[in-house]
Image (cartoon, rainbow, N blue to C red; front, top):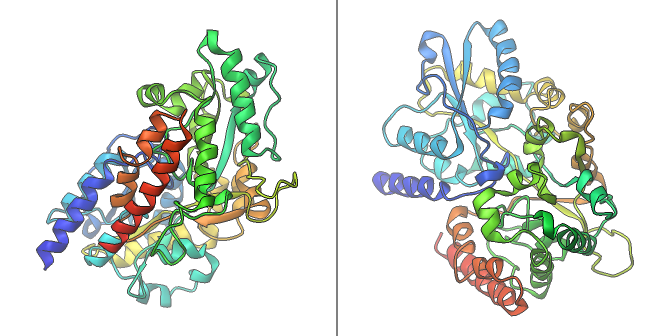
Amino acid sequence: MKMKKLLSLAMAAILVLSLAACGGSSGASSGGSSGGSSSGDSGSAAASGTLQINIWDNNQLAGLQEIADAWSAESGVTAKINVVDWDNYWTLLEAGASGGQMPDVFWMHSNTAQMYMENDLLLNLDDYIAKDDAIDLNNYYEGIVNLYKSGDHQYALPKDHDTIALLYNQAIFDKYGVEAPTDNWTWEDVYNAAAKITEAGAADGVYGYAINTSNNQDGWYNLVYDYGAQVITDDHKGTTIGSAEGKAGMEMMRKILTVAAPQATVAETGTDSLFMSNLVGMITQGSWMINSFYKAESHADYKWAMLPYADVNGNGACDKGERWSAYNGLGWAISANCANPDAAYSLISYFCNEAGQKKQAELGVTMAGYKGVSEEFAGAFEGMDVSAFVKIEDEGDLYFRPYTRNTTVWEDKLQQQGAFLDAWQNPSDPAVMEAACDNAQKIIEEAIANE
């Protein structure tokens, strides 16, 4: 039985390698696969006074190391953070889980958490949390807390949460005389603006919009919810993506694709690269990627607006339930075999208590997993207004990134032929998208039934 579980875990890790955004070229959500290079030894050295911590996002390294160093000054234990790129992160972690040496502390993600928790590879934090006055799980986003819980036991502390916003290049809108996005835009407004830019910019190779269709959390998932459907139902036992509402959301996505950069171009170059090369007017992106655009050469032209909404009732106003943003969150986890679990828990508690979460937000690392401190994050990027990521929490609705026990099984199939790949590659035919929604319904239902 144990071998069977480990083989299941290995398969999950292999499937993770196929992810794009919480993976891919755009980075994964708190989600994601931001680039980075491996540094240092990823094995445990806690017994010698050093904790080894693995993460995958190089953009977060400086801020997290600053917080960890402050903890080290108090504890006397060195905290060494190693950045390992998204693909290799899971390969190395799976190798450690299969008999090698896991890092002491590391990030967990919604795609893989269930497998690691069920195989007793993560430290049960219940007793530590019960004795820790600085950690009250009621202060954190419920979806993230529940994600890292198995059998009523807590296996990770919420590290952060993220939301999605519309990113646009003001210079492109100005060049082609198109009105720039506002927080009051609908998805129809996005379509109309994208069509104008793509037509006017044809000679320059400029498109109005680009989407990497494998980037679901920061992309098409949100339209499904805006139009009234759910990729995964709240009980994690079904989907309504094949409903009339789900099809309406995906039909809107199809329309936008007809005036967006072709998927062949996106596959070759990537949405972020196209945008930062001034070849695309708009994309949607997650808060975990702000730093990449903030540090880009043309960052002064980059502006953020809230995610558009779906004016389903046609009253010209954004009503409750018509503007949704996915949110996700990483968890700080500890290896079940950590040589110094007390020190490891002390570190993740330091990262996740209110003061640590505020510091993380102030440094612009990520938005907090602790509720009520996102304003600090909104002010972390001088000269760039990123308040759209925070405003949507008050002026829209959040849903937790869809997941089941084996998320990657159905998530991967949705990107293949027989599902949405056909519609992505042939967006001119509404019937293809409608059929894709029906097939997606069956794919998800069958995957859940086999879990």
